[in-house]
Image (cartoon, rainbow, N blue to C red):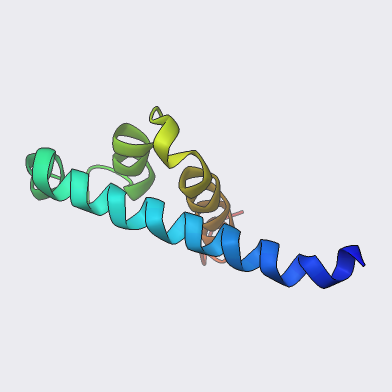
Length: 82
């Protein structure tokens, strides 16, 4: 019986994360646009920008968890890294 509810829980969690994603980019675009425009991808890593704009906000906690996992996964496939 629990297994029947699992797909619904996953869909709700996915929707919740998508709503956080939309809210994050709406807020960053409106209030912190200069942080994104001034971001230098040669001098800084993307994770530093995301950490600075996302990690300390409780309203993005689930989104930040997903972003952290994606950042870790992306580092596993970097050529030349040991």
